[in-house]
Image 1 (cartoon, rainbow, N blue to C red):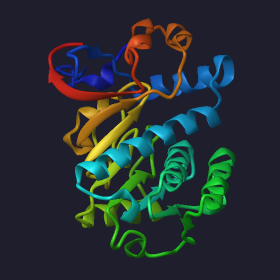
Image 2: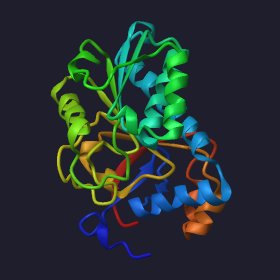
Image 3: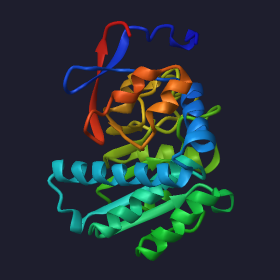
Image 4: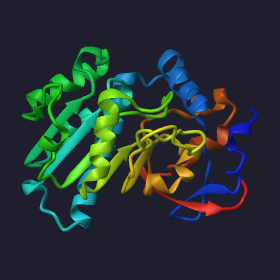
Length: 263
């Protein structure tokens, strides 16, 4: 597959904490990974969302610990879109509540357009005791005294500049001094090119899923880690990227560094 979108980024590769090169994908390849998994091999969307959310919660807890915070006295605000990225953020909220985080709140860009699986996760979050803010709530009311913002507004499927509620969430998050943990890619960042057609989250840390995206070479992604969401090796074989099936090697999360070189 040709990678013309990578012009100017060919020298940026990803390396794990053991010095191993980690293959990357663009948005179209990641879309095909998801399609093969959901339509042909599994896991299904609910399973992948659950795996993503659990890993995201673990990353959030680790960030709070590094900040010297007692998670039982912390507030975490989750900014969620209506698709799979938002669903992963909402799922993380339930896991954080279940593991003792004192105050977890969720604001969804458009509740009426929330996908079926993310809506199921929102109901589970509600039963875990989390707070769901009604649409139109001022973002400053969500995490005004919070310790961490989770950005799950827009994933790798970005098309054009963020608008409406998504834009307001991004601008507000960037206006605070609160650390931001982004899911998969910072909202507003093109997963293939690393460019931003409009407003983009300035992430403290980005936990990306399955494989890193080329766009994460951008410094706006902050620190990087890679999380396993259960994609079987057969998916990568069908994609024509069999080398991508062995990146975790006994771990569910892998720290990543950007490195100069050629893939």
